[in-house]
Amino acid sequence: MEGLPEGIDSKFRYVLLVAKRAEQLVQGSAPKSKSKHAKPTRMAMEEIEKNQVKWQLTPPEEETTSLETE
Image 1 (spheres, rainbow, N blue to C red):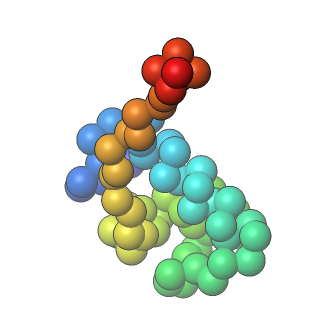
Image 2 (image 1 turned 60 degrees about the horizontal axis):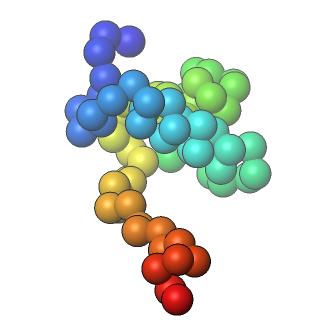
């Protein structure tokens, strides 16, 4: 693999996406396409590289501390 797939801004995000999709595959989710790979991680990498997995970045939620609620 050369560089990151289109639309993914960091290696960390790529690893998180692959891990999440691989876990879905392990839990029984159907693959998006035929793959020459048998391992869920490699299948997930291939799906993400082909832009077959839809994902959305949501802004972080602000955490409130107990001091702010009093």
